[in-house]
Length: 455
Ligand SMILES: [Zn+2]
Image (tube, rainbow, N blue to C red; front, side):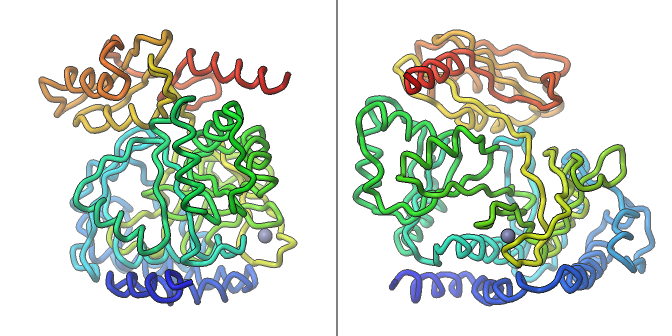
């Protein structure tokens, strides 16, 4: 109560963000008609295009339009080019709006989306993304300041900023748990931390939360007495069997899907009627195949325009994810557009010789730290060996290979043999998706675990 009513707004105010004002606005506008929301989108799009064309050095050239050009309709957006990670990387510094209020904030991502990306955002976007998240949680009766536990897949490496965040988390009732060390031995400690913290909701990678539930179940630990009312899934595909396992473990709590990314923003979230609502006030989402938008029921690449990032134009940004428009209106009554569940993003666990289930991201972080790595794939065929395939370009350091070997060994254990293999290119799998981490060992174990559970 105290955390929600006083500390959190103070914290936001301290950061000079307008999160709470935006939150109140979004609470209202979600009930607007689709038509009125489109009007808002067009007004915002015109402002955004004006900023992109006039305040950045490169966007007008890149877009091939005059600096005075403005979209007359939302369809006019299609006259602008698609922007991919490569374009942002090669023109990054000329795409920055240096005069953005509060200054541009630099962010280095990579994560499960594979190729690392450095980009800029601003306080406005930060506040809007946060406000959109608060609104979506409110759909599930989770209010700002309610106790929330984050189950993260990767190791938590603390720097100065993170320590500040830890203090902030304590202020704002958040607990960060790294699922990096999950194993049959450590799951008890995990559950104990949750039991003491008493979270109202969980938030994190569905793969990690599912694994925690499975290990807890096998260890005979009961999670149903925790006050968890809802579980929010993010960053990966949420599979039906994961939904089932998690929900059962928490006494029938709903498991809710969310879709977003560091660079794309808070893109969509599931409502209690089971539809994925786009954050239409902040984002225009397109679904493109062969250069054209697809109709309801069809799949295309998800392309996003973040209407509230003035630091760098994320206009028609290609996410590499696949999805489609649903075309339906939701019975919940919200005017926010509905999109179909996202497919893509495949990571896997790897298993350390000491039995730990290590989330693929933990190894991805190692590889993405090294400059000049263009593509990569991490393969585990045996418990004691890892093969890292990389495609390298300019800037790959002389000790790059050793750094990968060292980093992987640090996370997996020194007894693991690490081979680094250079490749010309890495092919997607049969479904057309790139898989960054593939572990036969983890695959076999989770199949065995499921079969055990079914018996
Ligand atoms: Zn709805």
